Image (cartoon, rainbow, N blue to C red; front, side, top):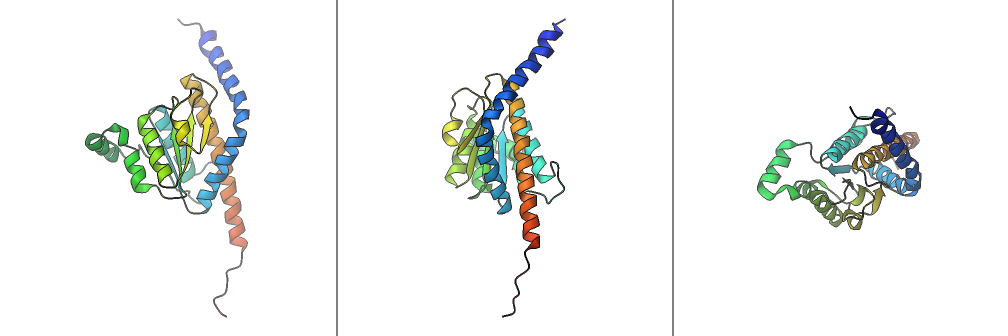
Length: 206
């Protein structure tokens, strides 16, 4: 059997090392969180895309906005582009898998929206194409990626780069950062909604 200390303790130690370094990402996380909050307050949406484990993270984080994270509040518009299997398989069959996200971005993404592309390698061609089209359509593009230089960096307004080359550690960092963004945006939206509810309605009588 494998050495349990090597499998479990080493993994925990490597995880904690990466998490500690995420302190250095706070400035970029703040910028992304502010942009996401503004988008939600202005009636825009957050769109997510990724493959494999990154698709799972995209779906998870979209659900946190649509449902709730920690606070009771209105539903916030957010979607993950891989969840409609009819759309994904039709586009893959008719146009190729590289366009499964790009085609949806072309149809759904509007100026002021936020597009988040998630790829541990930063080399996923379908995610890169989605980000390129989103940028052309006036969306705010964000890359969740790992430490290696990659194509996504040139396509994103902001890059959340987990300081690791190990896929599991990068994915663990991505979900931590995603949860922090959810927390910030949820609080910001709730504050904005409370402030808006306190403003008296303007009378239509002159």
